[in-house]
Length: 178
Ligand SMILES: C[S@@+](CC[C@H](N)C(=O)[O-])C[C@H]1O[C@@H](n2cnc3c(N)ncnc32)[C@H](O)[C@@H]1O
Image (cartoon, rainbow, N blue to C red):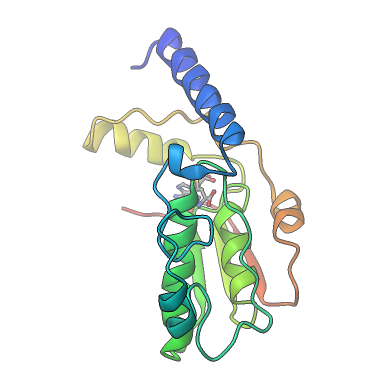
């Protein structure tokens, strides 16, 4: 069991990290590496981006927007966009689903880059369920802090995503993972 001192320490550290990342958000290299196809990267490669389309598929960028993710999470943002780009570039059919949406940080990224695809969002929209906490404690000896991720809701996520059409679908409930 984590003591409340450890919980407080962790929250203070996360909060400090977020504040530091905000200070350096315009030059994220200091916090986390930046990919060479990112215009702000020190290794930005114009030729490669011109040939390959960079973050956008060669068929064009019309209707596609790349939004910011959390300011400390630049590389994850870039990876998600590259994966989406690859699906679009190769015309892979299908829809998207995300289990674990929280406040919609990743969902807004996905929808705004690929609004033509259906996006199904699964979450309690009220934080971790006690059943997952019990499972993690018993199986992997990990203590889930069930007080985290409660500060959300479907309306808040809708507001974050600002859906461009009717392709975003919400599924609220507990979804068994084990
Ligand atoms: C780390 S957050 C997800 C972060 C999110 N992907 C983002 O981009 O910001 C984990 C989320 O998963 C949800 N979650 C975890 N286990 C779940 C389950 N079994 N059923 C439904 N929601 C679950 C929690 O409620 C929480 O909102």
